[in-house]
Length: 209
Image 1 (cartoon, rainbow, N blue to C red):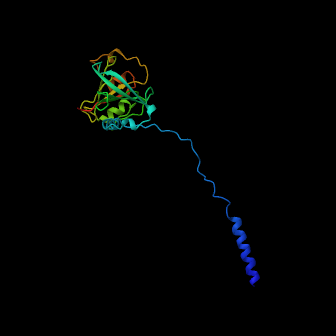
Image 2: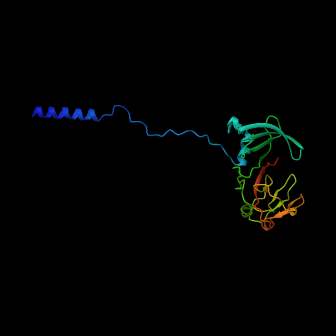
Image 3: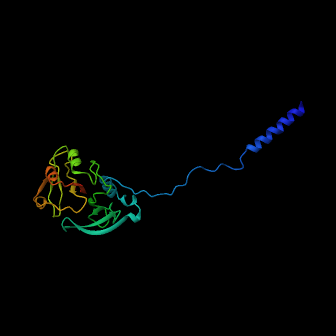
């Protein structure tokens, strides 16, 4: 009987040793190439970062470029910090001092860029969608001058003293003579008559001082 138990014990030890792995199992985690994601914020958030002096910490050094420019028809010299410079996503942050402590305005101007406003207006938004969001018919200024396509929300839901919106097209579209000039106001109905697809091509955030 004792011999029988000894044989059984030896057999059990042998089986256990055989099943024990020689080393820890290999990880089944797949190593993926790290792809850097570009950070995109809404324009009002960018203003907040700029005001607190933390904006440059939010982006890689290669995604920033500092220049000097004249804005507002050459009446104001500013220091401009470009985010994603020389790309379709370029965003301009204008400061009125060399130390970049006083923000003048923030500007997005590429219709296919991902920038947007906290009002839900986004670059590339079609005219019809913008008018629906405004809950009232809008008008916008004529073309071939400095403030071409500036939107008048006519006291609708999107009326603002700090956010200025500009409409344009996604290519070189020949504007009818009725749409050219600083004293011209264009309606959505007129745009439909000429079958021109206007969309948001510019956002300018200029906080009250």
